[in-house]
Each structure stands twice: as structure tokens, then as C-alpha cells.
Image (tube, rainbow, N blue to C red; front, side, top):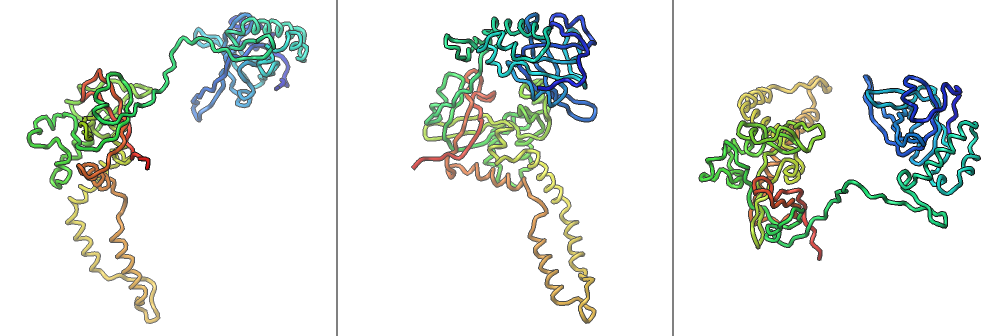
Amino acid sequence: MMASAFGWFGPLIDLSKASSHIGDFVQLLVFVHRSFPVQCKSSKREITRTDIEVGDDTTPYFLVSLWQKHMGSMVAAGDLVLLQNFKIAKYGDAVEARTVQWSSLISLVHPHHSLLSKAVEELVTGCRVGATTKDKLRRVIKWVQQSRSTICNIKLQSNQTQQIEHLPRNWTVLEEERPRDCFSLIEVSQLTTSCKAIVCASIGEIVPLHTARTLGDTKKEKVFISRRVYRTEDSKLMDDLICTGCQLCGSPLDSKFERSAVPLICWKSSTRRHSICSIYRPFMLYLWDESDYMPVLVKNRTAEILFGNMKAGRVYSAYKEEIHNQNLGPRNECKDNDASERPVINPRPSGEGLPSSNTLEVDKGLQSEEKHLPDKFNFYRVWLILLKMLLKQGKNSPLKFEIIVDPSLDIESGKFEMVSATMPCFGT
């Protein structure tokens, strides 16, 4: 309970008359349907207010904004509250009440099951309020009790115990369907309904989706990554696996050929805007087991899982840096040779005015250690090693794949699309 230290600045009104008091201070006695926090941004910081949906015997639903943080924690759904010194405001066509510095809130009936388990007069007698407020309280309590099936979702049995009454919904709750456990790839390929499937299979090949660069390379075997990953002279490998695109939906946006097929909006973004950065280019991951082989579509997010949670941006940045250092290699070597030929002068002299033998040994040890320590972690090299290991055909244990199956799509559009890949745990 929070009493007002300022007194009443306006009349106690029905919610139906709120539109006649725009800009005025009023008192409201209402039933709380629900409350929810709302984040707002001011010029300097973020503010969280609490909006409560209330009603009375004249208007079933009305919005009230609580800007005081402590006041929002005092309200619970199902309470009967007295709102003191609230200001009526209008925004467009909507009328609402909001707090000011001297607003206060008093909880009259709490918890909400008291509304149904006690008589009206018993509830009114226990509230220390004036005669006008008690009269309004009676009317609101009667309204709540008469409309309890639609307001409280609570009903009383003959023994006065309460039960939750679930009203029929006018929407469908989408429950996540458990993935189907399939014993083989051929079982997955024969599914005729959209679902998720889990299957153990081995990785056979990676083939990037058709781009302007790879349309004529099939005969030359340039589309098969396993044939190219060991070629040091293959400078286009990174460009075929990493591109510029949307990190959310995985759509590539780095060429006219691909951009024409990419939707203008991103359905995985709340703002419907593409989030542009370096991503893994969509590719087909060919899986195999003893029964069959299957091409599975892999997009950016799932490619990150497959490649040890390494993001494409880090891999590509490390690759470009390595290429840059290779181009500057001869110059750097000359500089290093010049530096190594110069004598190392230690400012701390020994007793004879020359560097001591102990100091020279320490300096040599530090120099040798620095030569063996890398400047920073090379994501490109680690990614390349992992890619080679994944494509060791016939030498790897099978992985456990979760796959989305959509029979209405073709193969390259995502009839089978990878969701995750993990190491299977077989019972003994």
C-alpha cells in the first residue's frame, strides 16, 4: 500500500468519463487485468515503465502508464487498486492515464481470489476509504464477480474452492515438434511431410551452390571442395566458400547473379532488414551412409556450427592478412636480417662496464621464444585444417545431423536443410 502525501487533486471518476478530463488530475478505482514492462528511450538513457490494463463497471479495458519503478512492482493482475492523482492524457485517438510526481497507488483487494471467495460487503468493510470510494468499490466488485468467466478466468464450485478456467483461444499455439529419429538417409529421403529428422551419417563432399563463377567448372572438378582444399595455388577457394551477405537468413549479396534471387526483406529479422557482413556462402553438404547419399543445404548459421563456431568474418580477415604478409615477405625478411646483425646493447652494465654474460643469455632466450610465438590466433589456418579433416572421405566417424525436411521444395532451395551437427553418443 502506498498512501498519498499530497491529498486528492481531482474527483473520483468512472473510466467512461475519462475523455472529458483530458489534462486533469483524477482518482480511479479499477480492476487490474494485466501488467507488462515497456522499454523507452530518452535522449540520455533507457527507461522502463510499467503499463497496466485496467477496467471498471463502466469501461472493461483502459490503459494506465506507471512511470515510477517502485509503483510498477506493487501491481499484480487481479488486484483492485485506487489510483490517486493520475493525469488523463490523449495520444492520437487513444485516451490513457499516467503517473506524475505526486501520484500514488493503494491496493484495496489482494490477492485476487478474495474477490470470489468473499461477499461484497465483507470486502468493502475491510477497506478504510470514504463513502464515495466504498460505493464505487461495491460496483466494481459486483462487476468483477458477475463477469468473472471473462475477466478472471476463475469460477467457484459449491464448496467455494477456486479453479482455473481455461477459456477457448482464438489462436493456435505452435508447439515445437520433436524431431523424428531416423535409422538411415533413405528413411529421411522418403518422408512426405514437413518435419525435423535426426540421422547419423558421414560427410562426403562440399559443393557450393551455383554462382556465376562455378557454372562452367563441373567438368574441371572445380565445384568439389575436397579436390581443391589441398591445392595451395587455388586462390579462389575462399571466394567460393565465403562472401558478403546476410548473417541472419544466409543470403549472399556479393554478385549481380545472386542478388537478383535474394528477397528484398529478411524474414528472420524483426526489422525485416538484411544484416550485411561476411558469411559462409550456401553450399550443398553431401552426406552418405550404407543405404544412400543425400545433398543437404547448409547456410551461414549452420555452417558456423559445422566449422567449429568460427565466423566467416574472422576466417576471411585472417586469410586476407596472411596474403598481405606473404606479399610483403621479402621486405620483412631484409629488415629482420638487418636487425639481427645489429649488436644488442643492454643499458645495465656489469662490473667491467660491458654487458654481462647472464644478460646476453637471457636476451638470446627471449629472442628465440618470440620467434616461435605467433603474433595472434590464425583463424584461417585452423579453419583450413578443420575443413581438410571433415573431407577425409571414409576416414571419419559419422556425425549426428538434425535436418529440416520440406518436400514442397527442390534440393537446392532447401528440401533438406541442416540445423545442427553433433558428435553422437552411442550406448555400450
